[in-house]
Length: 114
Image 1 (cartoon, rainbow, N blue to C red):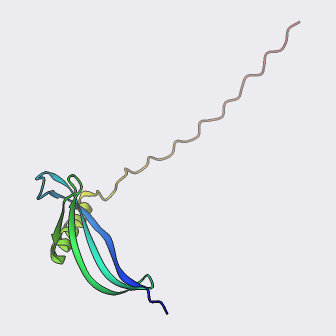
Image 2: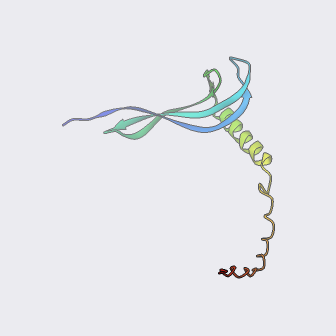
Image 3: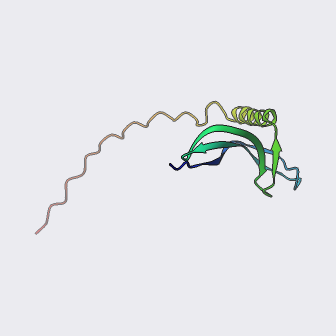
C-alpha cells in the first residue's frame, strides 16, 4: 500500500494598502497576504501547520513579515478608507427622457411633366 503525503503551502491575498515601503522608502501599494502551511495526505490538505502574514511592495518586490494583528489592522484601515472615499451616488441621476418629436407629413412627390 502506498501513502502519498507531503506539505502544501497556500497563499491568499487579503488586501492592498497604499503605504511607505520600508526598503525603497517610496510610497507604493503594499499587498497584504497570508501564507498557510498544511500537512496533506493524497494531495488533500488535512492539518494546518502554521500561518504567516506578510506585506509585499509592488514597486521593489520586498516582502516583510507582519503579525496577525498588524495585517488585520492594515486591511481594516484600507477597507475603511476606500469606503469613505466612495461617494454615495457614483453617477448623477439620468435626465427625464425627451418627448418624441411630432410626426411630419412628407410633401407629395413631384408629378412627372410631359
